[in-house]
Every structure is written in structure tokens, then in C-alpha cells.
Image: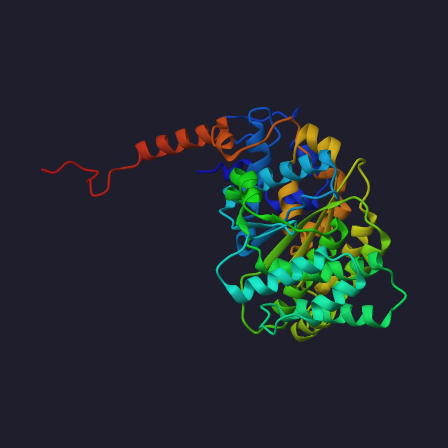
Length: 411
């Protein structure tokens, strides 16, 4: 059982400047009359970091989570290490609140299966990614088998790009390939599967060894990643069915090419129309939370991710379904995620208070831990505050009158 009384409510920890002062390590407390504050030395680091998430953020159980994992040249080695650190911490957050977290990766696709029609379509997309000339791209598309594509939106996206290639005859072979790649990667992703985060962390290398690499540029995969998310969000917003709301978490490079950023913004624009309709129908500025898109940029300084911040600032009020968090990989590698990382990374795109509080009082929010090791739920449960709570409950139970026993002796 968690020591829920050890930590302040999220209202006090988020909205007041005195919160950080009240929970200073130097602040005295009386063990015989009150629980130790979360930043007191009596707490182990796992309890200090994960305890507030346990006590204040049960709301996280209302959502399912999908993390897009990058395994290509967009992230250098040190940032891939930070990406892994983030996934490991999110697993601990999920363990605390019993959350369902999935991982997707557009860098790989499944090996051939038994569905011949699906395999024909998949082979077409793989051949298009391997094509080296504009002529070959057009020939492959025109000779495609007539099948029921499992994702009509991506098929339409390819068809639009193909028509552009037909009209823009001055495009050279390389430009033609890059023009088409994002749509083909998105189409190929429909044959991919996702993995439960726990399984992914335990078997990642074996998982990737059993898949085929996708032969495309990292920028193309990133554009496809946002195309897929925005299409899923569009479908979610236009559907009458009340599916479980989804938060997608994107771990991103600090900076991308402006052309890539512009394309991603066009994908976001697709969502604006149904989003505005939802807000107008609700007649409220309350944030729509059917879908949330979390952007986590990894940089070498405390400030960065300007392009991703722009996406965060596109919409306000009820239409704000995007949130941005920038992390300094040097600090993250040295200290690990802190108490405020969980609420920000998991709920920043769907919780107005989290988004607003972070912007207003960033200095009071501990995005980073204070110890250079991975915090765990197992260590959290060994914290002295939890043992003290269990002892207090045992004493209370021992002092209770047995049920059914009379207080006066029978004569």
C-alpha cells in the first residue's frame, strides 16, 4: 500500500510557489505527529520521484499510451541512450498506475506472412522504397495489383504524391524518391505490430532481429509518424464511438529541417476542422482529450525544441491537444527523470492544469531527479515511510475490539 499522505495534493504542488519551500530538505517535521514531506531525507529517491505520481495522478488511468520509438540516424547515440532512459522510466510510471503502454517503430516491418494479398501490397511498397528512378516509381505504382488496401488514407496519400510526380517532370530521380517516401512508409506501417512496453524493453534486440528494416530516410519516417498520428486523431474526433482516449508520445531530435517541420504542420492542420467542431458542439473551452500528442525533444542545452514548441502553441483552449517538453540529455543522463516528468510527459497534452502550471512555474517543477540511477517501484515500496505506515496500521488493527465480542462480561 502506498504512503499517499506523505505527498502534497497536486493542487498545492502545482499551483503555489511556497510548495517547494514547504518541502525543502532542511524543513523540520515531527515524526510522531505527521508524515515526512516528500523531499525529506527519510524518503528514498524512488519514493520521492514516484510517490507523487502514485498519490496525485490516478487520472492517468483514463488513457492508453503509444510511444513512437526512433532507431535511425535522426537520433545520435547519446540521444538514443536518453530515449531508452525515458522508456524505462515510463515503464515504472505505468507500473505504479497499472497503465497500458504500447511501443511502435517505423524503422522495421514484419517479415513475410501467409496472407498472400497483404504480402503483395507490402512487397509493392518495399519495391517502391528500393526504386532509384522516377520512371521506376511510376511503373511500379501503375502495375500495382487491385486489392482492398487496409488503409485507404495512406493509399490516397501515395496517389496524390504520384500525380505530383507525373506533373512535375523537372523533378530529378532523387527528389522524386524523397517526395514519395513518407507516404509509402506510412502505408508500409499498416503491416507493423506494436509491442507492450514491458515486452519491448525486455526483448527489443530480438524483436528487431525478427523484423526487416525499412529502406527509407529518417526524415521520411518522421513525417509518416505524424501523418499516422494525425489521421488516427482525425478518425477519433469524427467517430461517434467512445473509444478509450489515446496519448501518443513522440521522442524527437532537437531540430529538424524546416521543410520537414512544414510538412508535419500540414498534417496537424487536418485535425483542426473536426477539433473545432467538437469544441463548438461542447460550447466549452475545456480541452478535448479524445487524443493527445506529446512532443519530447532531446537537446544538449536546457532550452531548445523551438519547432516543436511552435506546434504546442498552434491552438489554445479546447483545441489544444498538443504539448511539448524539452529535455537536456546531459542532465537526463546524469540524474534521470524527476517527480514532474511523469505528469508532464504522460498528461501534458490532455490536462490543462499540467500544461499551464509548467509554463507558469517551470522553476518549481523537478523534471530531473537528484540521483544518477533508475528509480523503481520495487525500491519505492521499501521506503521507510511505507514501512512506518504499515506499522501504524498494524497497531491500529491490534487496538480494535474483536467483532462480536461484548464489552461487558457475561454472567
